[in-house]
Length: 186
View 1 (cartoon, rainbow, N blue to C red):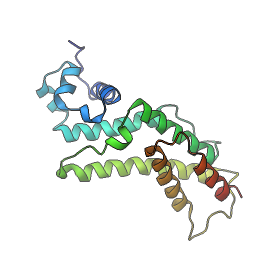
View 2: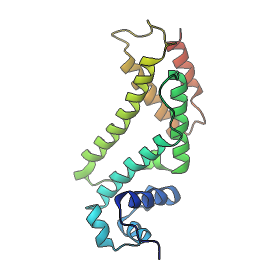
View 3: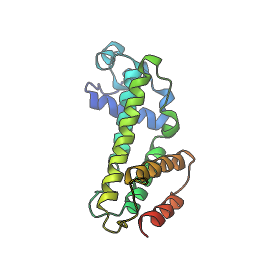
């Protein structure tokens, strides 16, 4: 039998391992309880149902991806930060196979609002980091943005395309970096 796991963080570590080894679809309450060495009822003391557990795991995996090889935002160009973000997420996608496309696993309709909110929070975090770096990039052209073409809009465009390239399995984001160079560094 496995070592008994009884803290939420330790349960999340077990869940991340399950997702990394078997994918999101394999995640279920009984498997998690077994892997943690606890009774199924004990796991329900931590998570009311599978949907709550899945939401917590998705958030935990995203945090793990972001903090792996975290690059300080100070004194880094927007282009370099974007490339680093792409690589962190790509490495995370390799560490957690199928996660990028599979974490929208079937959540009960009653919990879909929470799942959407968690995803929006994750994307807002990414956008905020990108926007901060763009605003602080001393090499960015002062006239690159206007009221009708704002930094916020551009960051949204960059993030949307970065995520699309990741889902498509692109080995790098070179084309996106070239667009950034042409827009931001005139």
